[in-house]
Image 1 (tube, rainbow, N blue to C red):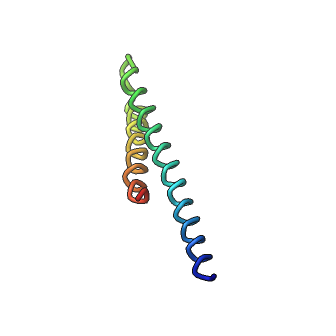
Image 2: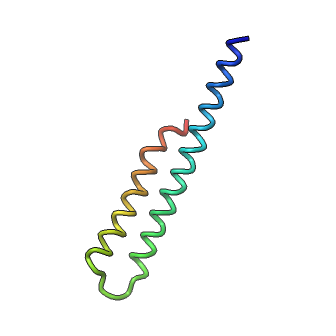
Length: 73
């Protein structure tokens, strides 16, 4: 019986890791899409700080995707 409970705990931990990683990847993709839409649709000259922040948000979203995709076995 202890083996079954250990397997159940491992399965729950694996499911939790998968759900959290999937959520972070979805957030990363949304951050990347939002920042790209902001960069593409801005018609006037961009302020360097605004452009840098938007690009930073894109990179953070990209890093979320790259670091968490390995947890989705």
